[in-house]
Length: 398
Image (cartoon, rainbow, N blue to C red; front, side, top):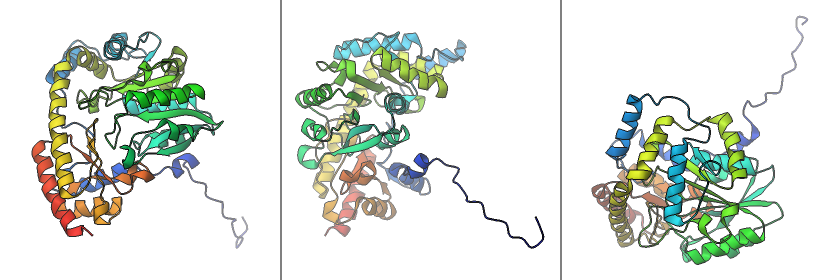
C-alpha cells in the first residue's frame, strides 16, 4: 500500500449466529448470579429439591464405579434402563412402549425437549405453547428454526391451558403443541376432560403433542394425566420425563423420551451427534431409582405437600393472592397489591429482605404481575421467608 493511502474499513460481522444473538438470557439465571454475590439470602428461586439423592441410589452408582462401568452405552441408553422406564409407564399409566425402539435416554428433559424440536421442525413451522411457560420451551423452538405461538392462560382459569384457546391459534404452519403439566411456574394441573379436548384438537389438525411430564409424581390430591395414555394420543405424542424432581436427582442429568419408533429414531440421530449417550453411572443410578425408589418418592412428596400448604396459606395471609398449586413445587402469587412490576418486586425483595423469587414475566408476558416461589426448601426457611415478604409487602402496599 502506498504511503499515505487510506485503508477501506472492513465491515465487522458478528461471530454469533442471528438466532443466538436474538436469544434473551434466562430471567432465572440473572437472579442466580445476583444471589451468588450476597450472604444470608433465603432462596425460593431455584427449582430443585433440597433433598440429597436417596442413599440407595447413590450407593448403586458407587457400586457401578467399583465394578468398572465407566464406558459408553448404546446411543439409545442402557436397555436395562429403557426397560425400567417402559415398565414404570405401563404400570403407572397403562401406556405401552417398546424399550428397544420407542424409548431414548436423554441428558435430562432439557435435552429431550431440544432433540424433539430439532427433530420435528422445519424453518417457519409454528409451535403453540400455553404460557406462562417454562423458560426453555420458547428458546428450544427458536433454535430449531420454529416460531413460538403463545396461548396465554390467566388466573381466572387457574393458569390451565384450554383447548379452545389452542385451536384458535392453529394455522397451516402449525406443527406441534407443547404442554408442561404439572406446570412450571404456576403449579397448575389439567383435568382429564380438558386434556382429552386438547388431544382431540391435535388429532383434528394432525399435530404433534410434546408433553413435558417431569413433575408427574409431584401432585397433591389429584391424579396426574399422562397425555400419551389419552384415547388416540399415543401415536402423536412425544412424552418427556426424567428422574430429577421426584427422585432428587437434578445433578445426575437423566431424562427420557417415549414416542413412536420413527420419531425416536430421528431424535436419536441428533442425540448421537451431540451427546452420544447419557452418563453411564447416572443411567445405572436411574435403574435403581425406578426399581427401588418408590418409598423415597412418597416420603418427599409428603414433605412437599406440607410445605405447599404452609407457603400458600402464608402468601394469602400476607396479601399476595395465590391460586392453590396442585402439582410441582411452585406457588405463583399475584404481587399487584404492591403496584410493582414483577422485576421490581423481585429485585427490591432481594435487596431489602434477602429473599429470592423469580419474576413472573421470565415465563412469558402473561406472567407479569406474579412471581414464582419454589417451596422445595426447608419449612423453617419458608416460614422465615414469609415473615420477610410480609414486612416487604407492608412497606410497599399501595
